[in-house]
Amino acid sequence: QVQLVESGGGLVQPGGSLRLSCAASGFTFSAYAMNWYRQAPGKERELVAVITSVGGNTNYADSVKGRFIISRDNAKNTVYLQMNSLKPEDTAVYFCHIDSRRLRGYWGRGTQVTVSS
Picture 1: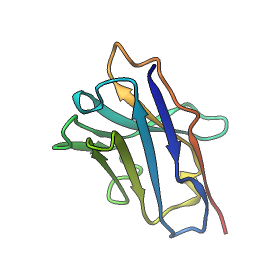
Picture 2: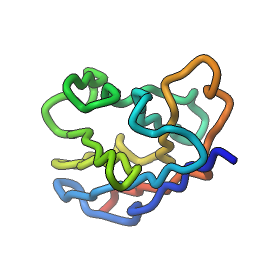
Picture 3: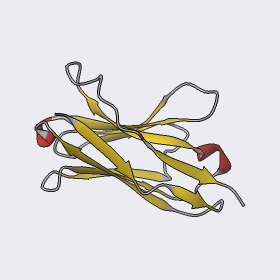
Picture 4: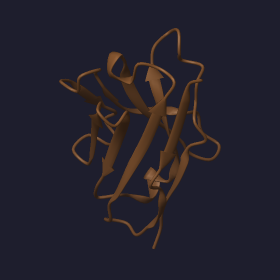
């Protein structure tokens, strides 16, 4: 059974940092690119970052480029999102997601990130 479990969210002041983790199971993690999405209240889900299956290539939304870093550890079946210089507009629920047409229907519960003073 495919499972995605996000963690690491919380309340942080503007300019602060958080590291999100997503533990994956039930599929061959190392074979798939992985994404991080976020959804703010009243807004559509937004693709934030993508990493290829072996981590050689990454891509970011313009809104987070230069501040966020996506990485993965295939030995631990985990994908990470290091978020630096956080802004109030980064407040959202963050989800990891499998970049696969066959497995695209699987989502975790997400982890809440709140950036506020």
